[in-house]
Length: 470
Image 1 (tube, helix red, strand yellow):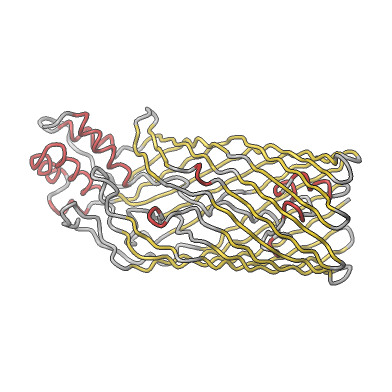
Image 2 (image 1 turned 60 degrees about the vertical axis):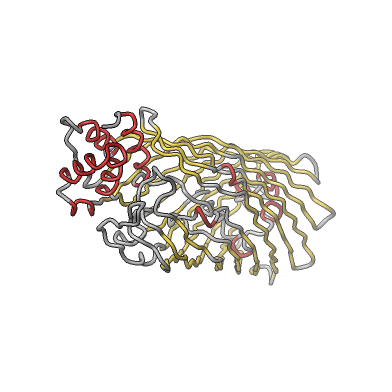
């Protein structure tokens, strides 16, 4: 029998099969932080925003909002995500022999509708000084595949939510230049699940550590060859609160044009939570193979986990100009998703469970839009944007089957006295998103099945906003 250290190392490597990957995404940054911007596909917001949602898009633009303003908005995000299989497999041994588990269904539609609320209050405290606070949700993700689907060993449920509290100050330096800054106190919560092929993981780990004797012993512990089909769902839940900041500047050019630049910092989240394993087997710890049993029981044990994730910083450069009844706007926004290169998951005792490469890439988004003042009551909007995904094809998972997106948006504003209602709608055309996940990503990695095929994704966004000024 090999030493206990090697057995434990093999089991720890196998554990990644059923510890869900918190925050595996991009494209899970939410730009839907008002309804007035949705109608122009959020083009040029760092320069063109004229309401209290400037707290998010460019704090310097808060100097465009006179007096006191209260703004509340909610967006509905409708995702449709389906999987088309080409040659996926059930989990299998390196020699190609499959585990006796069902391959499964195509997973159905993993999408659905989610609400993204936000609210802002701004106050002109002095002729050149503004204060404000915003509460919003800058990150979020929700996908849920059918529990019997063929990719269940990679992902079943992914639910990531955030709350961001953003106190802000803005100063009008002179009639041309405004500056602004804010702090972000942000919570991130994640609930993720996937299935674990307990029987196959235990069999493979024991065979690697102790040869055929260890493999035979595992079979005796799980009820014979049929026990290789043993599987169950594992779930991880975690949350964290942490700090970041945002800054911005806005410059008036002539009487009708503005330039804006806005930066939101990278935020380091250290998630603390628990992992649980449903229907996990219990192995004997008695000689002669008790070391293997102890290692397997430790690997399959519920308990505390932790991980660190550096969510990206963003930089937006925007311009707007108004001519008669028409306003044109455009922007280019960079997001530093390369801060997410791998995900280390640890137990409470700092034992490493996995070091999973993610290899996100920096991305950019470009948009253009226009607003037309129909009369004193109505304003109409339209816009287009192109938004790149940071997910590389070879690392794409069903937690976020993301692809490049093209936005097409329309909207309207109805003014009534000191109040106004904004509505917007956008359809996102999502590009090709292939799946090429292998059964094992390395010789010591667990068996999860090859997930080979493609995703078909569609997104619709609707939003409504009410603001009132005093």
